[in-house]
Image (cartoon, rainbow, N blue to C red; front, side, top):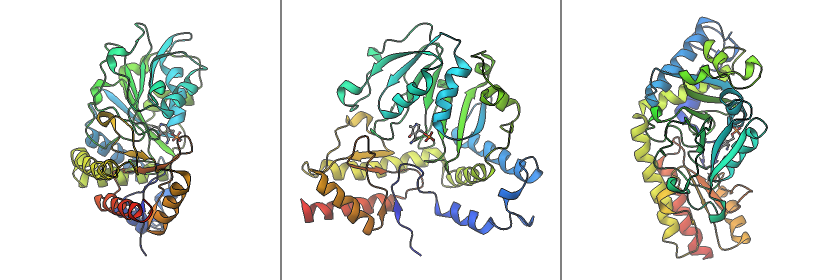
Length: 361
Ligand code: PMP
């Protein structure tokens, strides 16, 4: 069996060691005679798995004690709708910074529940940069300020935490969580779908300053209430146990590999290889994102025309490089370099890019 290098944006490549452990434990977890996915979420076995995953995630991201960590069924989009429901009063304003496709999604989910104020919009610049903080028109009475830490499609990433004063900063970290140190205390809330750096699709992580859970928000069911999930250790209803288990294995693997400092080093190295290949191609490959905000996780780039793009996708697949087709919103190619992608994968991609250009450039 050979495993290809998988550059998918999510669901994405997982560490081989994690997949092997899950495979080995599939029929009989820890000698209990059943798979972990067959056991009650309230039994000692799964409760142990869940608690260990949370403890390890807290260690990995240095999450302070005054933050709750929630494991929620579903993806990041659901959180985008829950934010205004839980934290904004009816008619209140929430501030949103638009840096690409996923900022827009966050706004679309919030609009039914809150008065969305766009404080800055990168679209006129083609989402090639993050509007500088000095140009943001923040509302003094906003319920929160929402940013997208890394834009998975447009390939722009904040390299600094913007200072937004006393209004809590909420951030979508779906595609960059655990790719480097995060100063959690600078945020009111961080959320992430797990399917990029944390494990499988079907579960999202929410890290929220506990005092914010006291906000009244808006009329909503218990199941949409973060405080209720927090009070019941994310077991308000049956949680996605399989996904939680796989997330736990992935987080443990990241700790064993050296934690977020190590992944920051690897991410810089992998991204540098690919950007160098793009920038030294004499315009054959193009990425126009401002260097200071280029994403280390998702690198979109373009070839001279559609025919070459299609050929690149087909030939790369044959060469064992999967998932390089760009998102339909922007086209082109996209290489996602999440934590489970080894540096050898980035090297193999660069080698393929150079060879492809020699043959077709
Ligand atoms: N935010 C970001 C930054 C994303 O990359 C994605 C998915 N690619 C989402 C939100 C939506 O996540 P989900 O599909 O899990 O709802």
